[in-house]
Length: 190
Length: 190
Image (cartoon, each protein chain N blue to C red):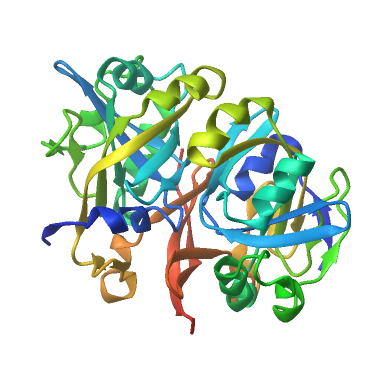
C-alpha cells in the first residue's frame, strides 16, 4: 500500500459515510488512542470535523493540553483492536496500545501520531469555538490540517472498497461487540 | 413491517454506524425534507444528536422557526430519492417532496413528520446550547424525544440487516451519486 495525501477540499469524503474512528492524541511524551463512533464532518473549506470526547478519558486530557488530535479510520482488520481501545481507558490501562498491537508513526502537522494499519487519517487542530460545547457536550470542533489515505481503498476523491480485500473495508459500530463492515457501492445518476 | 418504539436509552444505536439521514421539518403548514450526511449521536441519557444544517436551506428556516426536526434513516430503496432531496433546495423546488415520491405521516412529539419507507426515525427538539454553534458552524444539537424503527431490521437494541432484503440496508453517502449500503455484521467477543 501507499499512503497518499488527500486534497483538503475532499477530506470530508473520508468521513461522509460514517465510519468508526480511532482518535490519537499526544502531549509531551504521552500518547493515547481511543475509539469513537461519534464523529462527523462539519465543513468543507477549510475542512472541519466534530467528535465527542468524554471527560473521563485520557484522550480528553491530552487533547485539551495539546489542542490537537488525529482521526484515524480503522479497517475491519483492526476491529478487535478498535473494540479494545474503546472499552479501556488509558487512565486505567496505560499499556493498552501495546496490548492491542497499536503502532504509531509521526504525523505531518500535529504531535498526535498516525495509527499504522488504518485506511485514512485526518490531522486536526481544535477550534476556539469548541469552548462553548466542550464543557456541556464533550464536543470538539476542529480544522483538518492534513489528510491521508491508503491508495488501495481511496483514490481520486472516492472510496473504492470493492477493489480491495474485505479486511480493508471501513468499520461501523453499533454496540457491545457488534459492528458492520461497509458494503456494496451504489453509483446513481445525478 | 411494524414500526416499533425504540427504548430512548438505546436510541443512539440507530445512528452509531453512521448512516446518511433525511431531516424532516415543519412550521405551520410548511414541510420539508433534506438529506444530510453530517449527523451523529451526541449523548446517551437523555439521548442527543448533532446535525449540520446549512444556512441556505429551507430546512434551516423551518428548524429555526419550530425548534424541532426528525432524523429519518433511509434504506437503499430510497437512495435515488435521498440523492434528489439532498441536491435540491426546498426554496427553489417547492414540489420536491412530491417529485421524489416522499410521503409523510405524523410524529408523536414534534410537528415535523416521519418519512414513510425509512427504517428508523428520531424525533428531536433543538437544545438551547445550539445557539453558540448554529451561527458559526451551522451545527444543531438536539434532544431525542422519541425513536422508532422498522422491526424487520432493528430489534432488541440492535440492527439486523442480514435478516432482511438488501433494499432495507442503511445508506452511507460519499459524494456525487456515490453511496454505499451497510455490509456484513461482525460480532466480536468482549
